Amino acid sequence: MACSIPTSPDTFASGLLGYLDCQAVSLGGQGYLALAAPGSSVSLLLAAFLTLFVALIGYRMLLGERPSAQEGVLAVAKIGIVLAFATSWPAYRTTVFDVVMRAPAELAAEIGRPAGLPGASGGLAGRMDATDRAFRILAIRGVGVPTRAQVETAQGVAPPLFANFDSFALGASRVVFLVGSLGAFALVRLTAGLLLALGPLFIAFLLFALTRGLAEGWLRGLVAATLGSAAIAVILGVELALLEPWLSHLAAQRASNIAIPGIPVAMLATASIFAIAMAGVLAVIGRIAFSLRLPEGIAVRSVDAARPGEALRAPGIAASGAFTAAAPAEARSRAVAIADSIAAAQRREEQAAAMPSRAQAVGGSVVRQAADASSQGGVPLGQSFRPRNSRRVSGSAENRDRRA
Image (cartoon, rainbow, N blue to C red; front, side):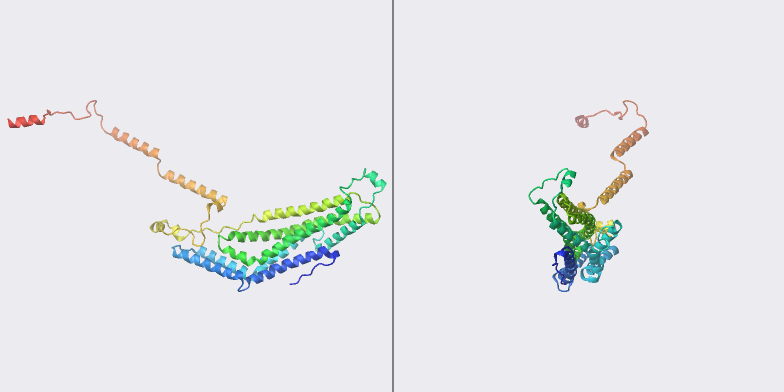
């Protein structure tokens, strides 16, 4: 799709905005259709991913893992979602493309219309053109020579930083205004268009836990671009609400040949402040968007893991989920880790309550021995052993008596 190129300086801002928006829409839509077309590199990669995903499920079943009904439904749903959004343009356009490309304007209008911001109801590009023309008119007419009354009222006029600084400041104010607004808009819109074009590739990464982070990053980028577009439109409306009446008043003063000393510095500072504010808001929006985390999935134990007797009879078979690998300990959330530690502590307490401790066992044996000893009758002192009633005879004496 051919996009019109801005040629007139009077409509530079609106022309460039239209060109950037047209390129973003064309890049996102046509790029998706090219990558999702049969025979493209991404479609071949998607087919390989699906084959590998199904093969891994089959190998796990061969190793003895029996999938539950819930795990099977989740796997089928994952395959269906990937195929629907990576190959079907109507589903992708309704769910993702239109939201990223059209939602920012609607969101900015809903926020800016009650506040009375310029361009909230449409015509933001035209308001930017009017502000740009006011900057040019003010730069052409210059600051003027202050009268004696103005100098006395202001208690003097501050000397410029260098020669012709006022002319430089007025021109720089216009440049900063255009670069800050159009540059931020180009950043978020072209980023959104590029990410939308690469949608089939990143959606395919949802199949595996190893590549899932790439899909999360893609989704975070889309969220950041969407919210950033709305934020830029709102901040630009706030800036226009300040600059439009201010520039009109300054142009009327210069038309009446009234000098405006000190205005170039204030104008340059204002344009720079709003440019920095746009950059800061984009950074905050990016930080918020990149805190997005996809759910880790439902960890369901397999049938073998749910039956410890069978697991003992078949120790070679790993008792784990059939479709999802165990998540590493560092990837688990803090709430899950705390819940597991509490459950383990409760199990230890129950086991400790069910069996006696070592001290209790030793104490019990001592008590039983004392009870056994007390149950026997008392023995007089010195009578613990049986007295010897027979006379001791040695072996040699017996032999001598036998020979005699």
